[in-house]
Length: 186
Image 1 (cartoon, rainbow, N blue to C red):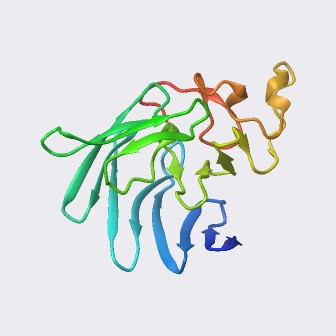
Image 2 (image 1 turned 180 degrees about the horizontal axis):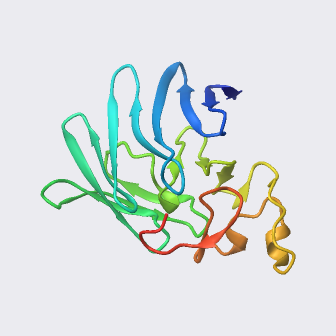
């Protein structure tokens, strides 16, 4: 297990580089991760005081915290646009700038899955994309890409660029290789 620490956040990773726990201001969250999906996904997150469970189909379908169920509704990139309750009433709504920085958030549901349906840290504003972290505020990754890119596509050779500089068409769930997202194919 490897750990990385900032002023108030410590993150631990397993041998495959997948995030397995996170501590913010002394509150530890542990993740139960499904590695049998095309991209590792969190099935459950647990703190000392709460448990959140996530249900997947092709994409994240719902979350349950305590007795409350919320259902995810996405746009063409897989970004969460709405959460609804069991009576199909919208409880939360989200809008984003082009590169994923939250523009407006309404509602009170704790939901870390925002831009492109990926895990967002409210403390840092960063998006966890498995191989590395992405900063929607600057539209760039924080660390250099270890993937070489494709010779025939020069834009893929940029080591910090997110989604080939085209976040309205491309997503990058691996943190290495941007691709066009097909609904239901995360």
